[in-house]
Amino acid sequence: MSDVPDHRGDLPALPTEEMLVNLGPSHPASHGTLRVLLKLDGERIVRAVPEIGYLHRGFEKSAEKGSWTEVIPYTDRLNYNSALLNNVGYCKAVEALLGVEVPPRNQAIRVIVSEMSRIMDHLIAIGTNLVDIGALTNFWYFFNLRERFYRLVEKLCGARLTTSYVRIGSLQHDLYPGFEDDLRALLPEIPRAVADVRGLVERNRIFHERTEGVGAIPAGEAIAYGFTGPCLRACGVPYDVRKSHPYYGYDQLDWDVPVGEAGDARDRILVRFEEILQSARILGQALAKLPAGPIAVADWKVVLPPKERVYGSIEALMGHFKIVMEGIRVPAGEIYDSTEAANGELGFYLVSDGSGRPYRVRVRPPCFPIYSAFPRLVEGQLVADAVAALGGLNVVAGELDR
Amino acid sequence: MGLERPPWDGEALDRLAEAVPGSVARRLDANGQASALVPAAKILDALRFLRDDPRGRFEMLLDLAGVDRLSLPDPLPRLEVVYHLYSVARAARVRLSVRVTEEDPKLPTATGLWPAANWFEREVYDLFGITFQGHPNLKRILCHREFVGHPLRKDYPIRKRQTVADPDPLTDELERPRP
Image (cartoon, rainbow over all chains, first blue to last red; front, side):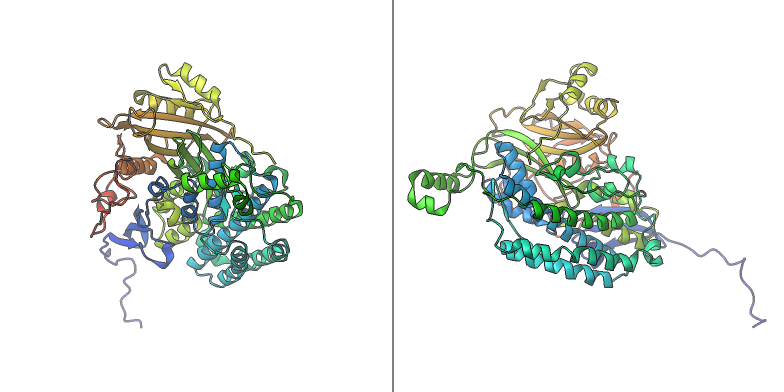
């Protein structure tokens, strides 16, 4: 081998050329129809240009064409990983404009379905994020638990994803007999699944190296970009609508807002782990305190009268007729109302002209402003980092594009 | 288990009216939510004041929405842009409204104040046809580049369909300066 010349040190510089690569719009790692045009220098991202709108269905336009109630099924399709949270958010906003407050039992049930939904959403977010960086096994641990939640949701409202469970001033129906036992049986499974997956990743060097410092953003900048939810809390900002502007008695339950420090892909995952456990705490307390009583407001201008009354009294018959034919008459005015959805602050800005139809339904999808920071998060990093960062943002095309 | 209203900060709007003369044309407070109608010429000053006012500290542009007022009782000027600001530090909210005419739908961009305004304004431009002057990349965002009209205007027919054959190459955005 001694006759092989040693070229180290005097190699001519290899020619380099910037390359354009499309990530998506249809790619297993892009979590829905997202497209990012990447300008690459080798594996390093020089420029990232996201294009959205591939899943734009005209949610806000469609909402103006029916009654206020007819918007509910569309809300299932915003963040379709946590449809129940969207149902609750929308109905709560309409109720705020109506000036009605749902009974305590309804509020407690909404807390329960919201936290179930949040857990399911976080299970998907963490599970797929880890798959993207090569950790497949935990995906099965989490999807196992998620499947059990889906069965419970299916038993509750007949659908797994497109739930449409919540009604303005009411619910589709009360909990079925035995729901509480079913959910209580599921509660111990939550920390078990989280422990299983944490056991796989928490001391795993690959996990840390793939996520630490990846897609990081400091708190001030995250606020300027409009970050909310787990992505903002990963930066160390303890903003949670449930704590800062409590609704449905969240302030009377004992739970914590977990925060991260670095605002990177790792902290987003770790914050979501902890939020799953906090949601489980909320579920346990909400079940223990679940009040008896009606689920619907006692106002036949807002909720349909019970069927047996409709057949037996003229007042109930008229109430039924008016709601079905004209829709709920929401008084003229405007309101902004928000809830803490799985991805952050889910806001609805509603404008009513006093007819039975929404004049304007503006939804503030939490992942829209978050995703707008994507170039800021990944430019200068590697292509593989872009994939690792994207999963942690949990961008859901359904609510991003509407 | 009462439904608690989030704290809307009317006092911040009082201070705004004092600090930036002419910025609050009318208060639009409704349903317990503090809101002000701001002339288009004053909107940037008003937003900047609210963001930087040490007693306000509205450091987040929470939401930006368009409204077509065509069939509301008070329809003119026709187009409205609604800014929702949030103070994370104080857990306070405030709303500003600006109205522009259909003939001259122009507003200054808020991208210099918040990077979040970039996509929000693109969306309002796309769906309502309001131009944000000085915006670094005022392209359609939800509809495609060959789309004609603005679908959230009330006179845009809901059943109208527009298709596009070719994807946007996006190469024009590669060269733009970073926000």
